[in-house]
Length: 382
Image 1 (tube, rainbow, N blue to C red):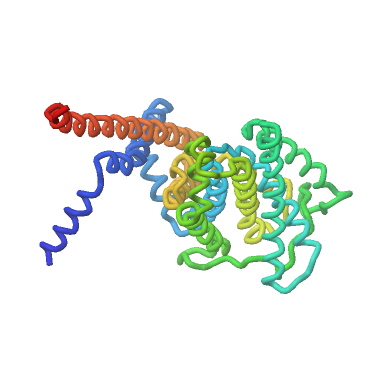
Image 2 (tube, one colour):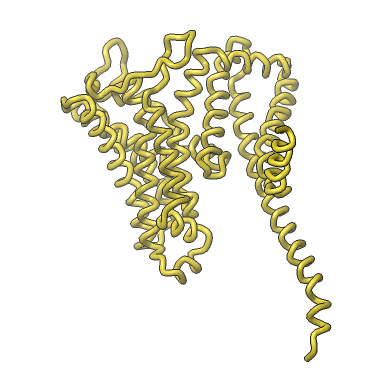
């Protein structure tokens, strides 16, 4: 039995190239490097580096912190998937932030205005969110295919427009109502039929995991299937790698750009749903901002792969949840921000080095093959 295991292990390792092992090790090395940089900064500020990281780790594995990590990771994962769809097409959808906020506002207004049976109510809210997100992203897609406007510029500008439009809509005269006990305003609360109950899956705490974590899992599976197991996904990846090659194979590039932006926006519309339907039940001025930009970092960290994005989202969420103990220790929580930024930069550099190594290794392999076949060619009769 042990010999069979050894044979299987040898075969498995034999299939993994040195470059492949480097690709797997790159994010781990980046995380270790980020931890070292953080320790240096902690030492400069006078805080005990090792003790601080140990306390953060211990605080992060408490039951309540685990729930917070899963809840943060749910929204981060959806945001990163929305960005990754564009990245696979070589499109930079920087507008996820505006898309999910406008989608959440509209979906919250619709959800608070209607009363339906529970499944239909939740489905309607999610459908409206996806529709608004897709429609807002389609503006950038149309500008690119019709007028050649860079999606980076258009989506950034659309973020600003979405923020202004949301502020205009969110007031007493239009969609919003006063929230009792505060100066905050928000949409009319969504009734119980439109709420998604949390999951009590972590013992030791009364805090619940977002029920829509299951939606994030489903979206991850759909993303993998569509991108890697369908003709559309092949055309999308081919267009992202080389538009000229895609055109030569009969792909309508402009159509693919528009569809990719619409799909990215539709997934972006889901980003605010776990918080809206699982915790706040209303879109107010304090609705979580900036999730779209976090998604960009996590998509880069996970290399646009659904499993890699999941690990990146969990890591990001863990750092976010464990940062709460720093204020108790009188240490600036900006340390966590520094660690996040260092991780992203380190991973990008590590992957670039691995990419260059792969190109160099392939060139050496081709050179060896050519060198081995050259004498035979020279000896052949003319």
